[in-house]
Picture 1 (cartoon, rainbow, N blue to C red):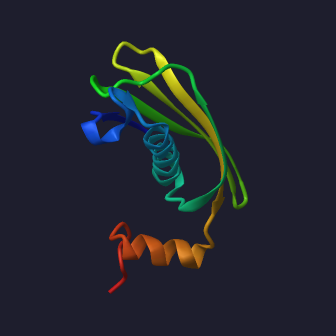
Picture 2 (cartoon, rainbow, N blue to C red):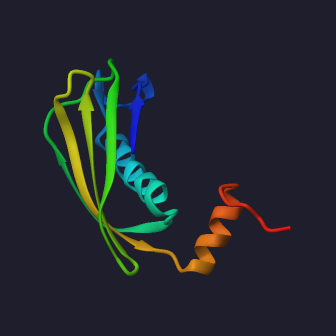
Length: 119
């Protein structure tokens, strides 16, 4: 999963510096979308470890990537990164997601409008 994100002034924690919580949310969401893209999997974050490598400003495009590392039953291991437009690594994360039961996964995907509802 790859996306581009344009920071907004309201994303800052300190003047001109992006809030770490916003970066964590970008990392978390990219991992969740990677699970959906790979296997239509929906889950909840059980554990997430984040490493902030550089201060992230509020100007310039960010490139966010997420990918599934391993799927074992309900356990899904994922990783994500945030780079600047030049490719410099700014933040990264690894996480363990717990996949929802098939019934709840179906209910959630239908509620979100992501699944075909049978006639």
